[in-house]
Image (cartoon, rainbow, N blue to C red):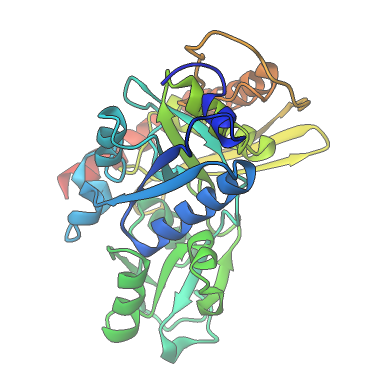
Length: 361
């Protein structure tokens, strides 16, 4: 499937028959909602195309009795979907961007990063604690989270609480909270709760001074075959320039630190008056040791389309030919510079110890 704009041409009625684009997704309700949102945007842009959703289970969906950080597999929620993409069983795959490793397997690229929703974490309380905050929960209350990043930051901030792993999709975790008497509250991504229409369950939003978020959190990424120029053209229009540049900086920071879900790394980004601000931090597993810094870079965004070779050069796994290359490189350099600063100040030691302790438990 090559050529420039074949799918778009078919969409305008020039093709012999209505083309079907197959879209891969995980089976969870949230994954389906996210995929439906992306498909709705594509249908609005290409009314002449048909979209067929192909849902499948991933390793991360199947292994539910182990903390994510212990499974030791970087592509927990993506491998099976990429396998289908490789075998040409689907044309594109919709992911939560935070599930996509900063180095993708050869032959794949992120062809679109959609506009980010709320990137912050949210606290959902057990019905008997509605109206409370993490600060006002009773001593030794148990808070569920599947993330080392959240647990490390929140243990430091709220030492009176205990943090325990909780796995499963959003529906499962909320059911465990409500039906088992084990958890007083759980921490979830605010964006997922919003997409599910469960905003009413949010008891507290955690701001950066309490808990910085995961790289790419709140954004959706569309993965395609790296040399499928047709699909790159089709999905590339979904790129949201600000989200893209923030996420390039975040992913470059994580990649240069060699972080992943087995170590607590978190970020916060903002674009203001042509400046991209990136705050990044690393924590020990118990949150007692930490290091964070902020840097900024000047970014110029003027939409453009670059006619380049079919094998587009990627930055942290992302291809975006309609966003100025100079702006993308500036964002990537910002992430690398901040990671280098932290590494020079001793962050590697914090991360190595966190990794060893996580592996040992």
